[in-house]
Every structure is written in structure tokens, then in C-alpha cells.
Image 1: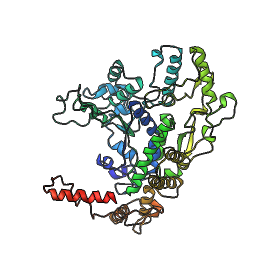
Image 2: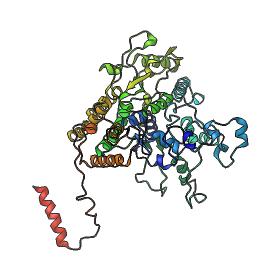
Image 3: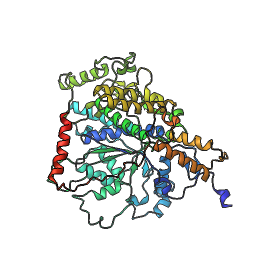
Image 4: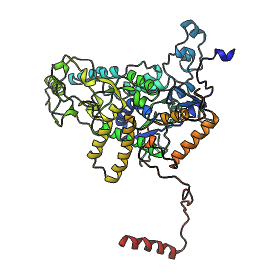
Length: 533
């Protein structure tokens, strides 16, 4: 009778079903704090895209699932919200079940699990608030920044009010204060003996990291750890951003390809001064779509149409829109020119002056035009900030004359830095793999695993992965990873060099000093002769 009442689903009753999953995480050290925040925002948009492209989790607890990715499973496995925090209790029930030991008494409405997508950008609109403006020009910039912040940050963001006020009082800008205060709506999960009252919050960050490290979001912003010696001026770990959504692949080649791709995309965005901003509600929609079967080929995702400011005109001026990527011209955007002229009239400044900054983030990155009414020019900036649904192939290879595609932009960046031929050859292999997977010419690991199970002679068309099927699947995956089994469905014409234990870890890096001068002289002379040849 109990079995009949259980809804048809894959029931996983332990946290390990989620946290036992593997993934690829890539951490970037930025040039400074502002660049790390900009990278955080941009990578957040890419998290569902690359999760779908690396999908590799179609099997759960011995069953074929109707999803391809792990993220939603982990999110549920560590979701420790109370019924009130989930929004499942009415006000009378909440008051009677308040839990004083929990932050917010366990009553604050929390819209997401602690393992989920981000709820707020941290770079947009952070430059200035309208109330802090000192002149008309600053007022224009401040209002503009706030509009951008409100447009793209369109999700509810519960915060710890005490933490937010403390951060603002100490000079932290509103965007970053909101992000940190949002982390503190959760209770810590891990406590270490001797690291509670013994921790000095003035010099150590253990308590902050206890909260930070148990808020598992698609990207994580990581401030530098404190120095052990405040007078130590040697190089130190800097401002970092962690990209966390990608799924583990069957071969080192694939893992390296996607790792390199994410690195190169961040360089493209910074070097070419581009941005990927779309409203976070659309990023969340993409996360849901990325879980579906074969989303990399069959899915469509919301993506920004224009990664750079418009070159000339827009629908607000009744002119035909032209993307900067549709021509090689470098003329200033008419919209930007008119905006500068209006600002110059108020401030009596030279309209050709550009706002340069000593830090690494440019004005374009910090102040992307808003997508609502512009009071200065009395127009709507819809086109410049518009987004649309694109296939994975379009996101990666381009669409029309307005969106160049991420892979062509990466190639343009490699040309820009004069990449050496050896490195470019390997990167071209990586990019070809990603392009073919986006085009549907190569399978994702999830599709490959699903097809292998379904085509197994012992499969009974009942979604059950029997022990025999599981064994054969593990052998196949292991041999593919070692390069012992060719897999053109996954890798195309790439041949994985077979991995062996021969020569691995046999020779330790000995630190014993040479006691014989004759031996030392012989070694030095040997390499001196080699160099002279």
C-alpha cells in the first residue's frame, strides 16, 4: 500500500546522491576586485549554457532520468530550508513554529536552495548611487547605473538587514553589500573544534568562509584570504571568481577543452570590452532548460543579441540598426555621441574626452546602457540591451550580422594576442570539439551514456540500469578515459593518447645533496656541452 502511494520518481534519500556527483570547477584570479566582479557577472550568464554543453548525468540511482544534468539533484539534496522559508506555511503557523536558534528564526522567505544559481549581479550599477552624486554629470551616471542594476537584477534577493547595514556603514557599495548580506540569510553547516570562539574576526576570515563555502552557487566570488604576516609584501592570492556549473567529462581532453574555453571567453570579454548581461530571471530559465534531455542540441536559451554598444542609430531614431560586428568601422555610436553632447551641455566639458580609469574595468563594463526610458534623450534603449532565444549552435558560432558567436570571438582574440602556432593548434582542437558538440555533430556524455544503456542487449525498456548494464558501462567509460577505446561519437577524429602507469610517480623529486664534487662537475659539464652544440 505504501509503495502504491509513492509517486513515480527516482527516490534518493541521502545527501550523498547529490554531493557525490563530480564536476569541473575553474577558478580565475583577476587583476583587481572590480575585474573579479565583472567576471562573476559575465560567467553567471554562461553557467547554464556550458552546463548543457557538458551534460553527463542521465542516470540516477540505477535509473535513466528524464534530465541530463546533476545540478537540480544536488540543489534538492542540500536544501535545508524550513517550510516557512520555502513559503509553505501561513503566518499563524510561522509564528507558532519560530526557531530562535536559526538566522531569521527560520521564518524569512528564501526563494532558492543554498545550492542554486545566483540571485544578484555584483558589478552592474555599483559605480555610484544617485544620492551620492556631486554634480549634474554624476547624477546622470548614478541614475543610469541604478537603472541598469534594477533591470538585470530582477529576482527577489532576501538579505540579512544587519549585515547589509554594517557593510554600507563601512563603505561597501550597495551591489556588493547586497550580495554578502544575501549569503548571511543561511545558517552555517560546518563547525570545527577550536575554530569558533577562538577565531579572531579582526584578522581571520574563518567564520565568513564557513558561510561562504556552504552557499554553493553557479559562480562564487572569493576575496583574498588574509596574510599570515601583515608586513609580508610578497605576491599573495588575489580577488578570484569560481565557475562551478560544468559537468565532468569522460576524457582529460574534453575537460581541458572546456576549461580552456571558459578562460578564453573571459579574456575576450575583458580585452574586447564586451558584456553578456541578460536579466537574471532569464538566466534561471536557462538553468531549467539546460537540465532537459539533449538541451545542447534541441534546446534554446535566452542570450544577449549585442555584446557591444550599437554602432549607429536604433529603432528610437527611426534609423536602420547596424551592429558593430556587421562592419569593420570604428566610428562612435550615434547614440553615445548624442548622450555625450547632452552631458557636455550641462557640464561644459569636451565631448571627446573619454572616461579612463587606472583599474582594469572600463566604463563600458561598469555602465552598460539601460533598457528602459532614457530621460536625457527621451527614448527607449530596447535594441541595445535586447536578448532573444538562441540555439547552442547560434550562441557558439553566431547568428545573423549582429551576433558573432563566442567561438569566432575566441579566434579573433587569439589573432589579437598573436598566439603561437603550437598553442593555437591545440586550442583549435578544443574549439572544434565544442563547435561540433554545439552543432549536434558530436554527442554530449549524457546522450552517449543514455544511448549506450538503451542499446544494451540486456536493457528491458523499463528505465532500469541493471548490474550487468552498469558494469559494461563503467568498463566502456574507463577505457574511453584511458584512451584504450576509440569513441568518435564523443570525440570525432580526436585520438586520445593511451594513459599508462609506466613512468608515473616512479621517480621521486629527491632533495638529497650531492656529496661528490666529481659527480656534480660531470653533470654540469654534460649540460654545458649540450648547450654549446
